[in-house]
Length: 495
Image (cartoon, rainbow, N blue to C red):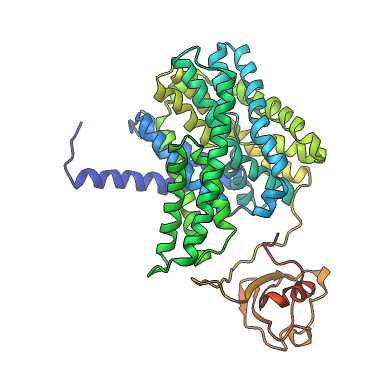
């Protein structure tokens, strides 16, 4: 093996990382046609690069992989929290919490029973069920966004809130069960209940405290450059995870809660900050799935293929649908929404990262567990992942929302400004189409600033006529907003 000195060694690392990431991103376009999550493409590229017959990159550092996965999950959960509506989260907190707790336990229990029937002993079967029990909204919404489908608000908000809350439960279960494999007889019901209360309670409290603390800090600090604000919010995310974890809380829940609290308050240069965290979230997904793909050994995966396929089918067709139906029955969800939520509970990178915990703990049989979990995640991406688009339309759960504008206009400022810029979609129901702007009863403190019509930006004047399909940007003041919404309808992206 050739040994490289610096800077050649670092150059080779950067070249390999750049090629893998670039190829994965460019191939992601193909996932739109197949209808599977984009992240699966990243995973498969990593697998091919690590294959002895193709890429030949040997990588078996489970500890480094776990750390990369943890950092990536922090970035992904924080970005998800920043873009989560607190109003929607409060509205659907009951069903989301039920799915994130009882749903995780129930899904894990049914899957464990299936694993036991397929030859696993009970300790390994229960651990396997816990590892694959949580869902991944990033995988779900990646499929929906790539196909241009928008889910109805209640369904989308429930899936998103559940996935943000259920990872900590799965992590606590996996950690305790892995420890019991290494030290048999240490697992007790009281200890499990206490660990749940501690992890979730401390994690939620720490996240809320740091989220509101971040709001306070962002209001009062004056940084010399706008690009420093995303650095500050990133440091808040990292601190939320680390601090909560060090005091025996769930760092992942703390990150998500901190993101929700911070994202629902005023953020200087908000659009730029959210854009940076969106990019960081995607960077985390690319890095995590590439590294986890490198860990996979195709020959070992084929050895567990029959068991992996069987458990993936049980998880998709039995465990998840049955538990979702039981959890959502008290909340009055229609049958088609229950069926949809039960079917599209995709598994992403979280189960693969969790499968590293027993490996790092030195638990017996952990390598086979990792291979089975890896196979389940890949199989789950195809079924139900490959059917998400078809099922959404078949069950008529697309939101009746206007198409997104091909261009977006935003005002960025360090300080909160008086007045706001709202965008509206002109459809036939409003009765605005065909009218001149001069004829509209617009308040004196309000003006139409820009019209986006197809690929054309129009500077509106009095004689400008509105057309169906226009995206109209209106600058108004808070007291005039009710009149503007009465005239133009609900703002785009509004709750």
